[in-house]
Amino acid sequence: MISTRLFSIHFATALALAGTTSAVYATNGINLIGFGAESTLMGGADVAVARDTSALNTNPAGLAQTKAPLLDIFGSVLRTTDLVHKDPRNEEHASNRYTALGGGGYARPLENTDCTVGIGLFAQGGAGGVFENLRTPFGNRDDLSSLFGIAKIIPGIGCQVNEKLSLGASLNLVYGSIEQDFFSNTSVNLGGGASFNGYKLEDASAIRTGFKLGMQYRVTPSLTLAAAYTEKTELPMTGGTLVADYTERGLGKVKYADASVKGFALPREVAVGLAFKPTDAWLLSFKLNWLNWDDAINDVKLRATKPDNAAAPAVYGSTNPADWKNQWVVATGVAYKWNDITTLYAGHNYGKNPIPRQNSSPLLAGILEHHLTFGAARKIDQHWLATGGVEWMLPVKVNYDNQLFGESEIRNEAFFLHFMLSRRW
Image (tube, rainbow, N blue to C red; front, top):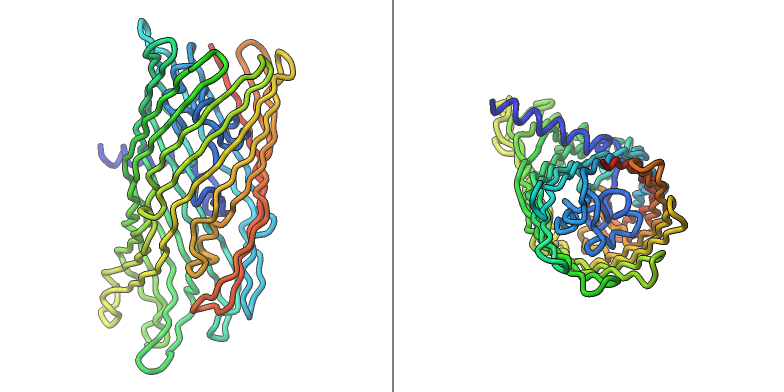
């Protein structure tokens, strides 16, 4: 029974993370800027607008606006245009240029109540890159990669307390996974008892729970205020395997049967926002979001035990400082009702890079800051609505001094295509 449940969880999250092992998509730190097409195409300025099933992951109070059964199916395709690692020996673009993400949600009102319930599947975010055949500091060539993804299954409820106030809550079942290749075919004796032994990590994952609370308050027919709180979710990824290269010791490749990566978490978040309709055609939205990265990502610890060779070290491990800083994200969005069947969207999202310069790395390029979004929604008929658009992650670069690579640079720029198909009954 337990194995069946876990299979279902892994299958569902695999759908949301489809393509995770082929590209990067870090945005607000390791979070996407929005969820569902309307949320994203308004630049993530969604907390006071949330009115489709993406409300489960933005502001569950918004579910109360759904007065009939609603199904949303959404997806995104990412194309990285400038994900580059540069050091004194290399200037290489990551080989993983494309990512496909998907998800969906369903909501329906509860009979004889002012509440709506729903359940959704969301790709929350992630980070990483694949750099093949780099020149290593040891004179050979080898691969360097880290692929980290997070998805959620979210049930929730939103209730209309009175004509002005709506409240909501959702439960987050969070799945995280990580794979790494850190010069896994490199083994060098550095002298003085020191050595470098590359590794390959696979299948480390975590399943944890969290929650989100939300509120929307309609001050006037044209002005809505809103707030949402998300609790921190630890993601200690365990149950993996690690293969270390001990060729310099005459041991060849050694497999460790129990590997883990600890030190990652989804941060505590507090979001406030407003939505304003100056006319029936225009909707303006604003969100200010605080992400408590300082308490979420500090030291990242890799540890592997149970080697298949008794002559190998009993524990393979490392600790890498991260020390992420808290992040303020400012999102603004606009929707314009062109006519009865077409609505246009635009938005801007800004969040300062939370990674300290000295802790930057090609393995976790969550340095993107500015995002511009454009799109449109069009009614197909009285039941069906199609929404689509583009998100441009503006180019950014960070120069840093890495103990392994020396004076280095990481650059990032990408485009997202977003689409959603909605069915109302």
